[in-house]
Length: 320
Image (cartoon, rainbow, N blue to C red; front, top):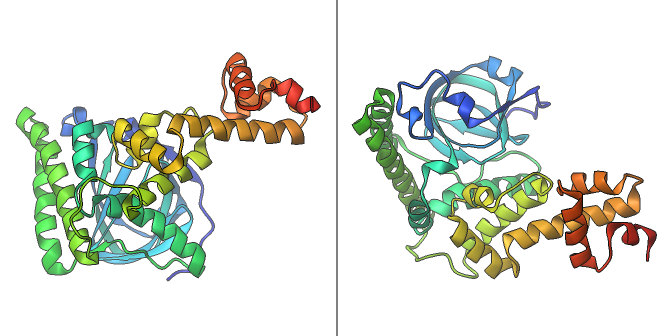
């Protein structure tokens, strides 16, 4: 494992920029972009932040170190792993590293598909719980040993490689029937990976996540982490739900059952707590504090703050 590198300059990417020049492919209608990449040492010169899309990596051959949110993970042939919304990454120390990479926007899934995927054994564990565990294990061990992401033997990788070949072919064709197949083949691939992960780590088939279920706890923990980090941004519940692969209605239900408040209430709580700290610790104006806490409308900021504390921001600052 390479020693941690300082993060190189970061380039921000939004999904629409990935589709430029690919209008002849299925990307014109399906928010999915297929990359086949040979990753050399030059990739460590720039970090990339995937602001509004997910990425799914398949290591076809070689080895290297993949830094994800600053944490180094050794990757090698057969590894399959996901990156969530807003994550920053770069590669280093690569030796003949080649990947198939699928970048996709949350809009690729309709609510019914999301709900079905959430009930597929292994899906939430692979795409939500496992990435969250990676960071926890790194903090506990103080080095970047990989978490329990999916690793496929050559025999297990062979059918996945065939699925990727078929998906890439239909995606690149961009025909109406190819576009229709692209979405279906992508979902088939995800279900196959979830089932394989479930078999690998021994997840028993289960129904919809329930209170006390580790998958439910991981889903809510991942959502809370995202909200704690980005509450000051103009977040929508739909965005947060997509980040943990749940429909908005299902996400609100699971979150409220676990946290005792809805996602919207939790966002408002975080913003009010931030505003309270700034009012006591800084000399910023009331409107500036509202903006920093995520309230773009000063009047709305005052209404929400008064409802939460019984005081206006100005009264709270004066200790009235």
